[in-house]
Image (cartoon, rainbow, N blue to C red; front, side):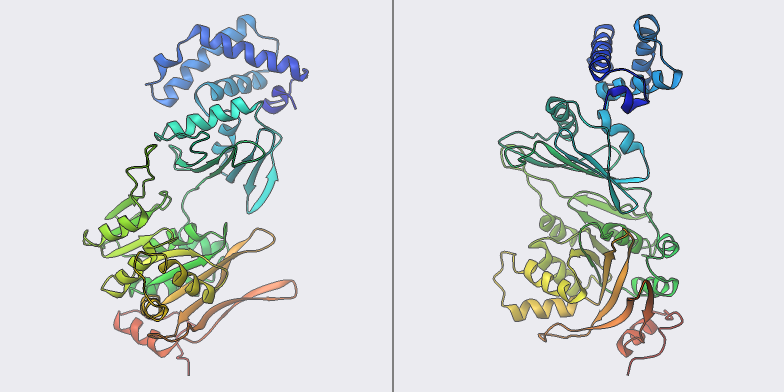
Length: 427
């Protein structure tokens, strides 16, 4: 597909459109020094380049429609100061993920479904220039000696890059966009969970239950954690800790901490574990960890067990019961060689509620189950259901279960009343 096909559809051959693009890119560089406009704000920089290109096209360009002319200008400016073919995808609010699998394969996710995009990079050189522009903006680099990197765009999008020799089919890049954060009413409106369950979770957050959000990749853990965090009272001091900052809390007293990888000399790394430990010295009312992935899990559990109730975090797991086992595995990765019974005691004492998320075959994300952790001390892990999404034939429905007396008592002590459907104690 030619450039003009990509930018709006002028009936030219591929070679002609590539020549047109290359010609006006070169003419733009002759007319203006990109370094001279580098310090300008992006809107001002783009407007200046667009004016120059418009003048050049008026004198030297082929006859084309106003629409195609505008799109051609946009593409050349995107190549010059933006991210080329990725710019319109990043601007598209319906796109939640952009996946570049080498030069010619470009995919996006919309509404939970993956679709192929006909636009593609023209060469590996162009793709690597885009990658370099992204990683250099956050003072990182990617090359054969450091072929993997994580970065974040100015708009908050998370970027992962992996290049040859690790990526066999060419440079690969994944960009995850984060739209306007969902609040709990938004998730209810999208039928991710019932309104009564949302009200119950709100009561539990205010009553300072420790809550673990579990799910596989792409199930919406960060989205749900953000909505859940929004239920924390505004008067409390909240410390958020993330590997790559994605949470967007609206309360007035929020301190955001982000891990830092090692520099090119292998120095300067600040891990999630370092930040969890430091957060305990910052007088937090709540600690929200974006995701536990390693030894920091033990520090998080110890914080939950020593006066920092109401903490929230996420973990990769396929069920509520598996999530507890996953925490045990991650906690064992710390530098403390603790027996399994001791880790189990920490987990049973720390985690009160597990929210398991899923994404079904149609791309719909929802709560699959909410469980209470009923095991205590060094007992084998055990949970009891609070909510289940049950599939029957072609339809599915949420089913609520009576609450355990211990939960009802704890809610009552906090001045919270369970919503209808949850008030009857489990026998």
